[in-house]
Length: 366
Ligand SMILES: *Cc1c(COP(=O)(O)O)cnc(C)c1O
Image (cartoon, rainbow, N blue to C red; front, side, top):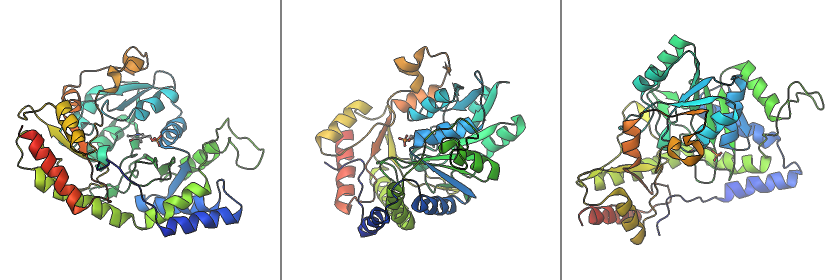
């Protein structure tokens, strides 16, 4: 089976982890600080605040905005469940804009339609490694005095017109095991605002600035030095990782572009795609349905994934939730029934890529 994601650590990670073990300081310490500094540099922001996972990062970022019950956060229904869970945990209401089928991200004109007097935050999710169309979202946020929180869990180092994911307002990242950069579990919040960064650091550490001096009711959201030690070497070679992901994506696109019923992902010249996922669409012209195609790929040893098979508000847990406001999103609904993500990770060989394209081509013509 060619897996949909794969992690491999090298001697650099081993050495740094051993350094932490021998230091005797394994909780949050100097390694976390170094990771924060280097991650802030990747994003071109002043501050990066490490936390224990990507969902926590979203919750902490929303907490800092002091949302009140009834305050609305506009996001996409075509995302991982954490996006919505974080909004609910922060005590706000989730509302949903439709997406653009070319980049799979929130459509700014649909966001504009969803703005009400209760809207406080626009929360784009940069899905699959490619950023949303930020300029119109920033303009909307300015016009209505809204905050921007970018769910960049899948888009470390992605850019839009030269500006990095996580640098348009508050940014949130995940280092879960399958993400482009990983610490097993881990997260990061990015900001250029000194005061926000300071408040986030206090919030993540039980509300303490100094030991046993509590400024606010906080949490334990800390990352550990052991985890940071895993991330630092990955960060150092991240440009190479993205280059490999991109060349894999280019090879897959070239191999699949002419297959009837398959749409390959669109690349934008003014956006750096970091290819967390390579996601094709199976259209009505294809001989197989999406689900038949996935089953066929699995039978042939290709670890295809469906991210995401249903819109979040279609699940029982959210369907009648009072803080989850359903809306009409025809494009997201159609796309959710069409997508398949194919392996694009840096450990793929040229043979793997040839196998993947052949298997898709054969399946599509049966
Ligand atoms: C992975 C992910 C998260 C949550 O990150 P965790 O580290 O798993 O908590 C949030 N949003 C999106 C879009 C993700 O893909």
